[in-house]
Every structure is written in structure tokens, then in C-alpha cells.
Amino acid sequence: MSAARARTWAHIGDESPWGIDTLPYAVADLPGGPRVVVRIGEQALDVAAVARVLAPDLVPLLDMPVLNPLMAAGPVTWQQVRAAITTWLTDEELRPQVEPLLMPLSGLSLRLPFEVADYVDFYSSRHHAENLGALFRPNQPALTANWLHQPIGYHGRAGTVIVTGTDVVRPHGQAKAADSPVPTFGPSRRLDIEAEVGFVVGVPSPLGQPVPAERFAEHVFGVVLVNDWSARDLQSWEYVPLGPFLGKSFATSVSAWVTPLEALQGARVAVPARDVPVLGYLASGDDWGLDIELTVRLQGDVISRPPFAPMYWSPAHQLAHLTANGASLRTGDLFASGTVSGPEPGQRGSFIELSWNGAEPLTLSDGTTRTFLEDGDQVRLSGVASRRDGVPIGLGEVIGQILPPADLR
Image 1 (cartoon, helix red, strand yellow):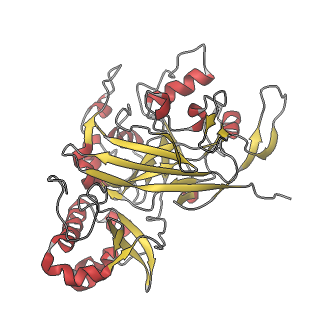
Image 2 (cartoon, helix red, strand yellow):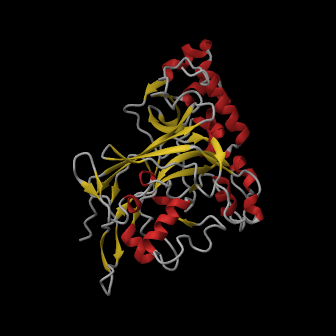
Image 3 (cartoon, one colour):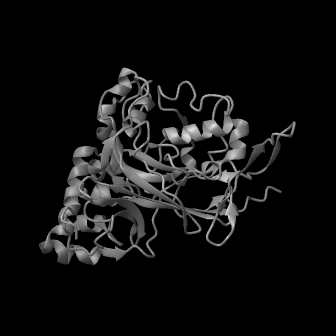
């Protein structure tokens, strides 16, 4: 076991990103009802059951079917709960009481971990934005005039945020071919992914009071991985002038495990240098990114490894901009980074980039090719953050399989 890694009596592999330094939360369907569990290695601890014996004051936060009560309790309570769980898994004297409440992950049924209040998706990767600019505006600047001055985003549909493992039905909508004078209605033919990192709000804020970047940690509870499924043909026809709508709103998948923000403190890195000075509300406070490597798999084949560290706009930038007009935060708000793409072809976080809008098909290990997703395809996103001390911190997987379109007859 690495010298930098905290020790636990629970069994974990030496290189596991799910050690005592991570301790992500989820909600599992268990005998007696759904309640909060915490991951350690390849096991989950029924922390609600442990709390009944060792910390009754925590039961109202942990014996719940969603994480929202814990998330709303605030940073002091988050630290107290995390410290208690750490003690339960490291104190040998407590082991006889705690170990029987560990269960294998295999066969465990996990729910959407929090009740989603609002969902906002940003567009914060410069490499992604420049790739799409090159594809769709070849004779114009790759970035729009506003991109270097503010985080660009859109409001999504909270009701279609789904937990990993939920199948995705191919959506219907309007699309218009370049050589057709009128649009047609039917199933999307250019179904895509967007590999993203999401941030979950715990503590709300009052309407009319912006949240400055330096108060990020007072409000944000943890981090999830996100797959913002995208129907590119629907999106390209509808997005002018108001932006994404039906091409995005049919499904957004999130991981079942929420990694606490505290676990990622050691993975902070500087954001890229600014090309132009930003306005004061974005220049102040926590100007940091996270050293996270995502992995995108299709049918088990690794097709991309997008790095999160080069993201131009940081999570704190996003939160500050999201509330700059006085928009309130609510417990369960989810805001996502937008597609994570790096500078290399093998670091692109969407098929529209990986296949260069269909011009350069991907070849899989079975010899088949893809430009966009086909029915039956399974996409798996995973991620690991690297702390400065070398300890890996895991982010929960996001898995989704494409089902054929619904029969509208």
C-alpha cells in the first residue's frame, strides 16, 4: 500500500482509486428500504445501519432514499460525517461492529443518488469548442466572440437526468439534411455522447444574491461523471436562435456514486492562462481545475481518454457565472462542465469530434466502424483524479446502452 494512502482495515487493492481517501456516497435499495451507502474498495458500507449503533445523530441524514438531506446540511456536517465514516473504517476496535455491514458491490442495486432540482450544462473545454468551430464554421474564428469572456451554458431538463445503467431510447425529432428544402421527423441518425464532469449543489442560496467563486466549497457537495447524450441532427436544426432543446433533453446519465469535494482537494491544478482579462466577478476567488483523466469505452474498447485539467473555465467560474444575475441555487442542482476534450485526437469526448463529423470513422476491435452510435451500443465512462501525493481518487462510472426508437404508430 502506498505510503501516502491512509490505512483502513477493509480490504482494497494497492492501486484501487476507492480507498479510504475517496469514500463516495450512493443510495442503495436494501432490506428495510433505500438508504445511503459508502464505497470502500469493491464493497459498500451500509452507513445508515452503522449510524444507528455508533452515531444516532447521523441517522436522519443517512437513513434516507436520497442524499439531499445530507447535502443540504452544509460543509461542517459533511466533514463530520466523513470523519465519522473514516473512523469506522480505520479503528480496529470498531471493526467487529462495522465489518458485518459491508456488502459486495456485485448485485447491489443503486438509485439516482439525489433528487435533481435544476440542471445546467456548460461548454467549458476550449479544445471541444475549437473543434466544433472548425467543423461548422470553417471560414470563421473557431471560438464565438463571447467564449473567452464568460462560461457558455444552457438549461437542461432535470426530469430526464437518469442514473448509470439506465437504457437510452433513441429519440425522435425534426432534422433537416443540407440538400433538402424541408425538415423530416423521425429517429435521430446522429446520436452522440458528451463525456463530462458534473458538480452537485448541496447548500442553496437566496434568490437575488450571487454566489462568488470563492464560496464554491460552501455550496458544492460533490462530483459525478456525466454523459450528456446528444442527437446532433436534431440539435443542428433547432439550436438557432435559442440553443439546445430536444437534441439534448431526452436523457442525461450520471454516476450513482458522488465523490465528495473534500476528497478532491489534493487534485486541484491551475486553470490555463487567460487569453483576455476576465471581468471581476470571474477573476476573484478559487481559480482552479482538477487533474482528472476520463476514459470512454464503446463495447469495452477504449476510444478516448479526455483530460479535465486543461478545461478553460473552472467549476468555480461556472458557479459564479450561473448565479451572477441573482439566480438562486437549490439543493440537488447539477451543473456539468460540457464535453471534456484534450488537444490530441485520442482525447476527444464526443463522437462528432472523434469521427470528425462522420468523415473519419472509428474502427473497433471487432472490425466494425462507427461515426455515431448504433442501436445496441454500450458506452461506459469512467474517471480517476490524481492527487499531488499520488493517491488516486475514483469517480463513479456512467454506463448507458442505446435502445431502438419507440414505435410512434
